[in-house]
Image 1 (cartoon, rainbow, N blue to C red):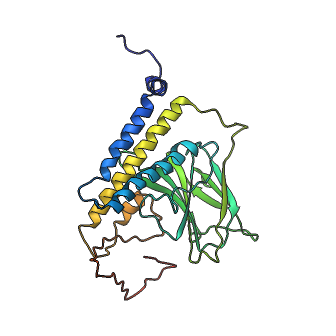
Image 2 (image 1 turned 90 degrees about the vertical axis):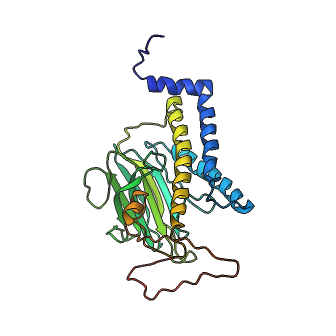
Image 3 (image 1 turned 180 degrees about the vertical axis):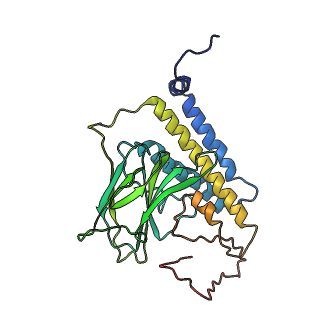
Length: 296
């Protein structure tokens, strides 16, 4: 058979996979294979935890479909919630309200909205993700209420995301930036108001959303399956590592936490606790460090 003379054989392969149905079979097969993370020897094997394991994979799939398919257009970005009460990724903070928007580091963006009264409002620009081979989701820029986020007299904010410095609130991004992640940390959900935010790409020059591109969709669906596999594997490995030092709360590797999308203002501790039915976990802190807030 003669070699392909197509200028883009990868696109030809993706289109063929869409047309033949191979793309869907591949997607389902990878999700099926990811189930081995729930069946790991060291994973809990009782009925409750086994069922929770399968539910975890369904939640990761739901998150990933938003991330890579439904909200993936960097030309027309929108904030969605990548982790919340019924969709958990791993190590998310229950005091946080998370938002994320997919962007393209080649362009400039603007975030506008109201500051609200939530205790902490932070933005990080990230590159990479759990779907990639190295599993890193690196922070390439940060802006927050602790580092000079400017708010006008009416409580409004405007933030420019760009590679070039900008006056006012500026969140630096790089060419390989893929998203902006927002953390809103509550001290009292009953009295504090969350920030209300929207994001837009600048200089679109009248562009309008395009119909679904089959080749792009093939890449998106493959990224969805890769994210489910990468995330499930990452946190299963992480939990197994915690078990090496039971009933202690050591400081985590802070550089590693930042590679996984951690907030640069947070100092992380991680531990594993093994309690018998007649035992309780008692937390003692001789001294609370000088910080704005902390939780366990």
